[in-house]
Amino acid sequence: MNLHYGWIISFTGTAVLFSCLGLGRFSLGMLLPSMAVSLDLNYSQMGLIGTGNFVGYMISVILAGIVAKAIGARWTITIGLVLVGGSMVLIGRATAYGEVMALYVATGIGSGLANVPLMGLISHWFLKCTRGRAAGTMLSGNGLAIVLSGVFVPWVNAVRGAEGWRTSWLAMGLLSIVIAAIAALLLRNEPKDKGLTPIGSANQPSNSFPDTGIQKKKDFNKWTLVHLGCIYALFGATYVVYATFIVTAMVSERGFGENTAGIFWAVVGGLSIFSGPLFGWLSDRLGRKMGMMLVYTLFTISFALVGANLPNPFLYASIGIFGLAVWSIPTIMSAAVGDYTGPFRAVKAFGFITLFFGVGQITGPAVAGFTADITGSFSMAFWLCAILTGSAVVLTYFLRPPSES
Image: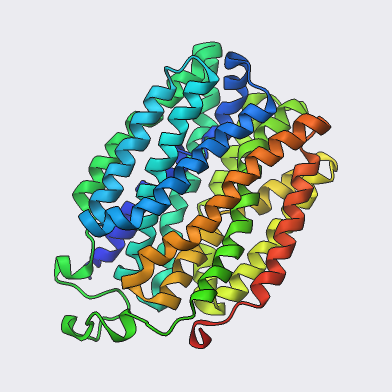
């Protein structure tokens, strides 16, 4: 049996997310401790570097739909990856906080240009019954990148010394440029570009999917997208605090060595490889609402365990829970947007809810870094995250199903 090209899209999307989010964003947590020493950064500055990336991401979210409409998702994603790779290479040569901040804003712009159209492609290539699994497969790319950074960065630092973080940025930037070339070669905007129908429509001819009807829902409630956006914002404000600062907290507050912290970060990445596919499959079976409520409950437990400063076994449990759940919300959200709006509005709709997500991401690292500077610990920041994800469980409970939207 031949592999449907939709799965080529999904697997290529795994590589895209490996680069634009996995390397471009989630490697920062491993790099920050050595960067802070080399560039004399305080906690607030470390948090603001992460915030700068999300400001760039927000800018690109506004632009991504317009650019993708003009030149197509395929080339928008490729341009985004080139920007991610080029800016990361230049970060490796930066000598001051201001340079890193400006370049990491550019990385964020590239990340958004790649990620937002990619999430929209899922709704074109996969119908509702397979959409969650496809999105989950792509999101596993983030986990693979975390595994890489957790092992690679400490190794480079051991070989290259205090300035090893520069080599890490250079290597990851060049790898991202290679992935941009792969994306340009393999991605396609719609199934009809390959003479195919979406996966899940094997028994229907290609001309039975016009630009109206099932693929173009006109009766969805726009306030439901606002509701989804608010739920997504709470994820953005919380997961990024953990991803940015858990390694720093382990090294500076709990006395872990960088290599040991890197191993635990790699464990997060290894578990997270299964996060998207697992919860995407569950959301296909249980529904998007039940899937999100389950995930936010797990996040609340994870943040509370680390915020309580309990003995290390509880920290390990927190890391395990976070790794297993971390990419589930983007997976479910990308599938949910297609459920509510249909594929031809999916890119624009996903961009809209990502604006809310971006506000959360911008706020989270800055507030966490500022709180840590005042209190001398990240404990309060993690407790605030637990409160927010607990609130997300309640907010998700009131989400209407697509049939009522």
